[in-house]
Image 1 (cartoon, rainbow, N blue to C red):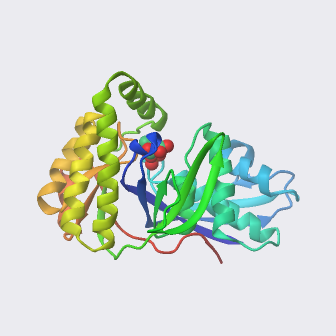
Image 2 (image 1 turned 90 degrees about the vertical axis):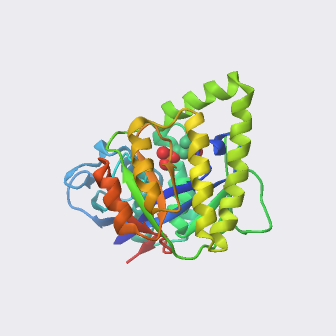
Image 3 (image 1 turned 135 degrees about the horizontal axis):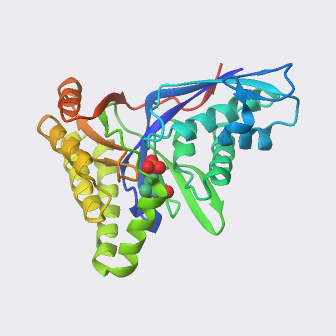
Length: 309
Ligand code: PMV
């Protein structure tokens, strides 16, 4: 049984989403494939090693698999530990393959829920963003409330927190992801922003402003107004920099991308990791990012979420 699930980038709203503002992410055309078959070994394996060593798959097996040992192989195009949703894609694809191997049908909502449970169990805290967008594909807006101007997908609740996931209908556009090569630890960056938000009231205004930009950005993208969406991304980036999650390496890649793109910003937690640029010249933008020392990935909106072959 083979299942495949996409990685993701956050277009608008990271960090502010922790304080109840909306967040828009999209699936990208870099995918993880997971194959699962029943095995004759005495224990389950992942890529030839004991599954015990792979916490995400070990947890997924604990939730979804009651049968004997399985042999799992994974293959991923998504850079790991870069904030591009590689662990969510692994969890989502594994959950889908195991569900199907167990004889049940694969539904994206069910996989998004199970995937979130696995990420939550492994990481301690997690939002359902990555597993939802990887299951659904396309683009999603995660909100604190259910809204009627977007197609509602599902609602996920955990420890008194509630998230409403909506589909965003966007046209095709090009994004170049620039990876600094440095690992940004999400929990550290979230703690850093929390410290600022608790101490300084102006940072709470910054968070609110990011929320407004996210709303406007989603509308601009839906309308195909890339110029406006790009300008809003750059504005979002500058506000993230005020929140302290920019780094000299990220800023260098953003500066390099701006002359050939509509706009650029950090994507995800920051403190390392990746930036994105919205561009009509992906080759030129990618070249500029590489010249500035980043690793560039030319990506597109991936409409296809999780599927089983
Ligand atoms: O770096 P990523 O893709 O894991 O994104 C983190 C997004 C934050 O808003 C910073 C944290 C969160 O849980 O929403």
